[in-house]
Image 1: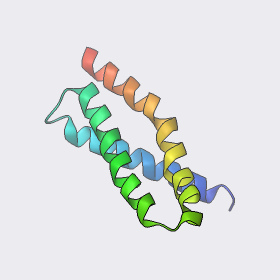
Image 2: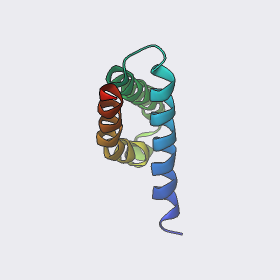
Image 3: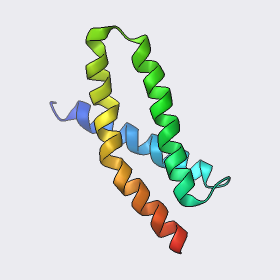
Image 4: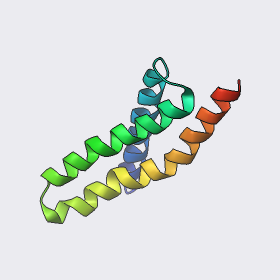
Length: 85
């Protein structure tokens, strides 16, 4: 049960980032789509963090921030690979 919440956060972040980057590839080059997807996600989650009480901000930041940072290199790698091919 202790692994369920971090795994859910990681899966949620992966779905959000990769789906958004995929959707933006119709408008932008793959690398720009990946960076824009990450920026949109950070902006939306920052607004969410600002609406929370101070004691919950760190937990919320850990819930989305850490998985996003772990997924960013993979997202950029996939975008770089998509640009080449």
